[in-house]
Image (cartoon, rainbow, N blue to C red):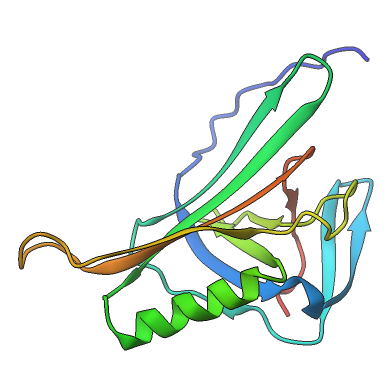
Length: 169
């Protein structure tokens, strides 16, 4: 396979996550993949994706690719902080924790409007969903600190997340 390179554009590429929506893996009925665009164009689900309103500028999505010389492994990491160390944030983290037992699928929307489907890949389907890595709750050290809960979800497979171009169910 010949390398094709990469041409830099003058377009802005703002960082940051605009929104995170989660659904349990078993609630996905099916999806439509467009091989010509290498993206998911439609998702049908028996439930709606739940949106998690995280603290401003306190959510990240990253992909780390590594190789042992033969095989490539991609680790997907989704981290977001919910405001408050109170019953409402505790209830939300409990729901994420319970849902992660069965595996979670995420639609992550970046600040530039690009959406990615995380927890699904063409090779593994929904067999490598996001699972709970950690939930950290902190009161902060002083009254000027923000209290909250930080959730980290992980999945590992062999492909980068696919872009999603459809309407979120």
